[in-house]
Image (cartoon, rainbow, N blue to C red):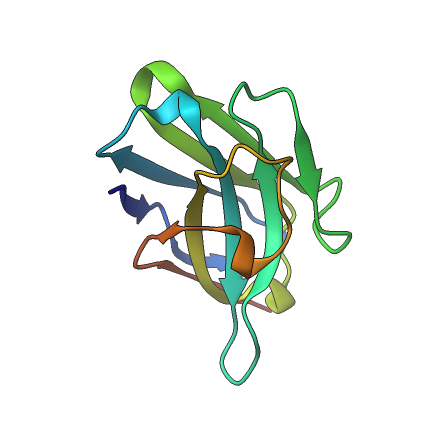
Length: 125
């Protein structure tokens, strides 16, 4: 079992920044990959970014490349999502997720085994 708790969401103006955190517990953090997804009202959950167990492998959705940065600190059991130059279309509930499969990092919802409850990000224009 893995428990995930997101934090850091909020209301920000377009062009602003937020840093999301996801604290993990329950299993050795360095043994699983992590991902960030988001879901806007009326839309499906979509991939944002993912990072491998070591932190070397990283993947981003095209919509956030150059603006968002995913990172992890295994000693703190935490994964981060630094979001810069935020746009109104980034407004969504943001989830972190854990992939225990030891496969290459996944961009699919089905590739993840555990999910947090989400943290709301709202970007005003």
